[in-house]
Image: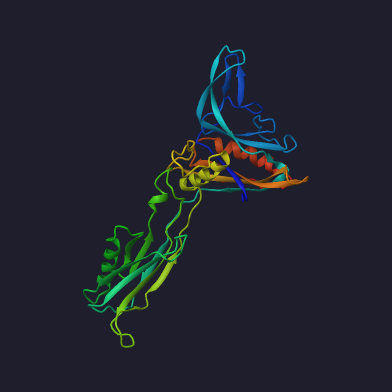
Length: 352
């Protein structure tokens, strides 16, 4: 069951096209036919008549707005008199945003993701030459069964110094080609394990998996020679563990790609398994960073199963490239802030 329909509009770092002025229709006519004024990646706010919403306009001027994005594809069209051909840019429109039904209006500035870091401090531990030591990494980011996937790294202490033991531990972990953590030495007595980027979701726009990060727990043990008459038991020896959790950040290109791909389903792109898969061109740019504007609102409709009006929840998002040298984000936010402040929700202006 669909709980919330979402659409995302992805802008480029550009200035507002000079030909796009307040009150005009994005599709203008001329003696030569139809000329589309937007450029690829340009975002404009339209009023209820689908004309460019001017700065300072409020809900008293238009109770409904639309988000409009210039797409990367164009096509040729002929005027009604069949006397001229013109090249027209395809656009994408949001669902109508009814001012009286807007629930929230928020903005998130770009923030880089950071991997989990776990420090194992072994200060004060007595190392015994010839004893087997091990680091066990238990991964928690396997959705199907957190903790089921583990990796264990073993080595034999070649002398009784902490420096040698930490060096052996780091070398053992980093020698594993399939490791999901990187081991480093913060000091002679601290082993630092840092999560690595997951290739299956951080490579490009066609990655099959959604963006995720390595989350894990780590244990530093030794193999006890004797335990209740038996040997070979893993025993902790007091390493102090300190963990900084992974931060997924905001507005990384992987985030925007995943939002865009999820929203394709509401554009009729439902086949993801039967080849050939025909997909639209993605607007997300690999390596770009984005600010994200989110409008949550409802749409009123008359349900066919009864005779009263229902509400359908919608989410409309806009992603702007940052850092930006163009004026597009400033212009769009200025228009949105004024209009949404005049809505019944009196939403505070967004600044990102």
